[in-house]
Image (cartoon, rainbow, N blue to C red):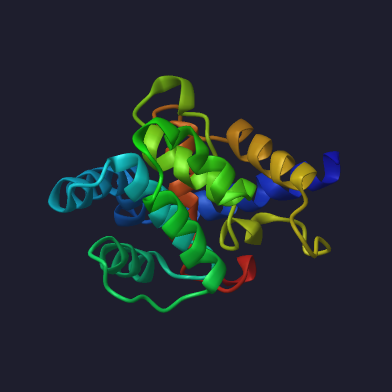
Length: 193
């Protein structure tokens, strides 16, 4: 475990030191901008923001962020969308929730990644949620190369390692994660950095 933590921290440091000012700015503001975009989509379509964030999170596995925005907007407007059936089913279930059942969004989303993503977007402005870290396939590039999958224990180890290595105290953990993510999504492997 300690060796794995050390590898994650060293890889995070390598990524952090390679960041441009533009990548730093983009990452620092990513979750806040995503939250604001969800608010606009909610207001424009008379849907509560929790549902918009939940639907966007449901579509996030396997799709790029840009594709998720497009699919989410089309879905909310009632247009036909093309993605995995399980994601469409989750989005429909979330969309159909009664306002007093919004607490069901995270259980509907299921996995740690999509639940963390939902919380980071929806709750990132709440100080008690600022320590959220979302580990997706891009962040997984920080993991030791002998890891083949991301178990719940490894998810927690990665999350805790990234939180502990935050090199700049003016970034909240979810911002630090997003800063690393902006670089990692541009490469196929940590060796490219």
